[in-house]
Amino acid sequence: MNYWLVKSEPFKYSWADFIKDKWTCWNGVRNYAARNFLKQMQKGDRVMFYHSNEGLEIVGFARVIREYYQDPTTDDPNWVAVDIEPVAKLKTPVSLKQIKADKELDKMTLIRRSRLSVMPVAKIEFDRILRLGN
DNA sequence: GCCAACGTTGGC
DNA sequence: GCCAACGTTGGC
Picture (tube, helix red, strand yellow):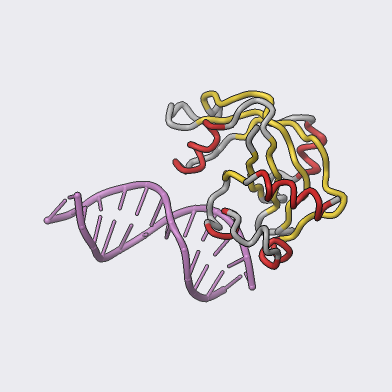
């Protein structure tokens, strides 16, 4: 199983919206690096859900329920989407500040490539975030 | 609101 | 194929 992190601006699509929807199609990615990670996602992979711009914290995690397919928001075959569903909310969100201050997390892609919206997360990092958030 | 990082576009 | 100009993301 692999681990990932996706970003969403909560005023566009928040964790609460995600819970309400039960699952969502993760579409609208228009960056090749991020697209390549979407394509690597497999059913059952875990996905951290991060609130960017506002919140600046990881609020919960999800799992992949459908592997990549044509992004329904465009006809351009370059772009793909996956479906994810919520697994659990973190009891305490893990903030960007905490991540930056944490020896095990300060090398995360989230810090190193701050503009990427879909990125891989190491298992150690994933477990560490769960521990901090629960 | 600013600015750094960085991806994309287009002229040459 | 290079690189300058430009646009976007996202933290501060």
